Image (cartoon, rainbow, N blue to C red):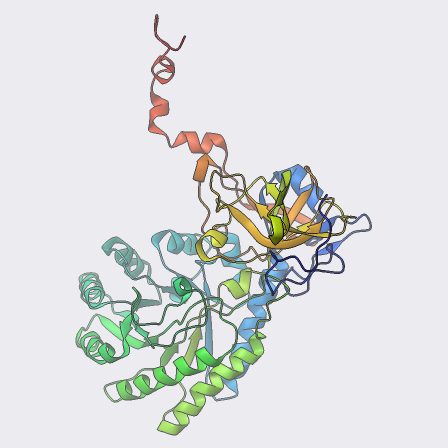
Length: 481
């Protein structure tokens, strides 16, 4: 087996060899994550061996108490920050991170609204009993049918993304005899310090309108009787640490907000979400209380300079609510030692999932952590790469991690911080059924999203309706020798 190698040239600078490769880094794992007396990982009071026995692997595990705690903490942080400046805050849960009816109920019970960006997300929120007035609807290409449905059910706010959408929604609302509340999405031009695909407020991308184009679009919205402009919206990106980008964006948005107030009321400013979380022990996200204070303080300063009241502020966290609450459990299938000559050696650990259940490493080069979950490893730490079972060399689950050298087939491996954008981005690549999502709390586990079966996959194949003979080519005198 590979020896421990603290100076391994293959290890990135940010990855430090742990003294104990069984430790669970605080802030990366759910608060309930612990090892029992035998070293088995428990989540929400439920052991991973029980979870495998009942639900199989791969398996998404979501800690309900963790989701609720993050939702409440974020809402409380922005409520307090806003109250300190004499205004109010609204917090929308960004459903694109992960949405099911149960999660929608959890976050709304903790005082959050829900942000959706597709008909499917809208219907899921409605099925969960979310009040339409507490739903915001995003998207750069909302279809006529999506807008019709949103107006029909009384969605509280639709975020307009283009001149075409202004006219489209105005006509729909007029035809239905409704007055639809809207925001206009604006690109502040602030470049978030994140992956290029996650930065959403720079000029050359699909969302929103440039700052300089916003006044003309606002004027047009105000000309349409069936639309009621409530304010502006901006989102600078995702997985952002620190408050500088948010503060700068807020400054630019308040300048526009102040100018547009001269033409009519503009009571709301939505500054989006994108608050980062820790995926590895090297990550150090800013506490949400500090972010809330810094962002709202920046807005208040800009309003004071211009002599205008601080508007009601809205925010849209998704990852910050569910990310840390999720853990994916896999079973190890094979291990393989790979020597790269003078560069060092790496242990490849193959698991029974991969890019179909977590596309983020392939899409964004995202880094994750991993630990043996069914027991405590006794071997020295070795540099490992956790890979999936798909026919792609880029099928990497955890690119760089130190695992105990005795990791072996049959072990359960757990990857934390998978609550956001893992199930949401999952696929059936290589005809792989999507795993179940199981909620754990107070020693109990229950399915909140049913896992797919091979029968589910085959049920959508229209060719299955053909006769058995046609499917197999097994007519008399035909077929392979």
